[in-house]
Length: 314
Figure 1 (cartoon, rainbow, N blue to C red):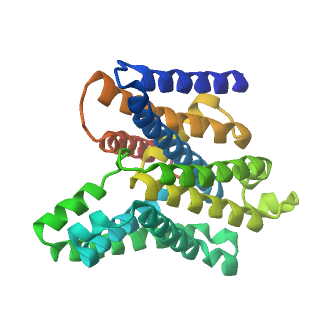
Figure 2: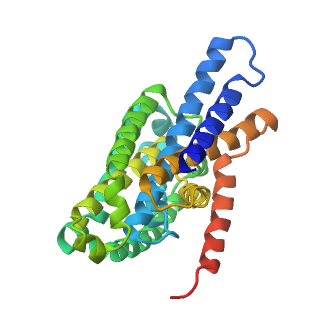
C-alpha cells in the first residue's frame, strides 16, 4: 500500500513536470525548454529539500507543528540581502556575481544553523527545545535589526530589498542549480541512510537509548542535514517558511505511517509537486506573474493554525 502510494506520487510529479515543460510550447523550442527546464529543476530541488528538512526536524524535535523556517532562517536571509544592498548600494548588489552571492549566503546560513544547534554538542541532544526557543527569539531580533537597516536605505535601494524578501524561482543561474542540487541530493541520500535510526529516535531519547541507539549522534547528524537542506534552498530562491509544514503534514496523512524510509521520499515528492503544480497554474493556465511563495505561505499558515487548534492539551 505504501509503495503504491509513493509510485502514484512519483507518477503525478512526472506528469506535472511534463506538462510544465511542454504546455503550449512554441518556437524557439530549444531556448524555451532550456528556460523551463532550469526553473523546473529549481522547483523540484527546493520543494524536495524543504519537505525532507521538515520531516527530519519534526522527528528530532518530537513535534509535528514545527518547521525549520520558524527558527529564523528567513529573517537571517532577509538581513543578508538588506546588508548587501546597504554596503554595496543597489547598483553594486545587482552587479555582485550571483554564484559568489549564493556561496556566501549558503555559508553564512550554514554557519548560523550550526551555531544554533552547536549547543547540543555540550548539552546533549535532549536540549532541542531550548535550541528551538533560542532560534525563535533570534528570528525576532534579526527582523528588528533588518527593519532598522531598511529604514536607512533610500527608496530605490529599498525596492531592491523588497524583491528579495519573497521567494523567486526565476533568478537562479545554472551553476547555482548544479551546486545546490548536488548538495541536496547528497543530503537526501544520507537522510534515507539514517531512516531506520530515525524510526527509533522518534520514540524519544530515553526509549531510543534503552534500545541501543546512539541518540545524540543521530540527532546531530540529522540537524546537520536540516541545516544543509534549509540553507541551500533558502540561498537558492529565498524564504519559504511554511512549505515544509505543508509537505510533511500531507506526507503523514497520505501514507499513515511513521517509517522514515517512506516519509522522506513522500515529503520530497509532495514538496516538489506543490511548487511545480502551483507554478504551472500561475504561469501556464492563468498567465499570471503572481508570487507563488505568497500563496504557499498563506495556505501553510492556515494549516499551522489548524494544527495548533486541533492539538489536544497535554
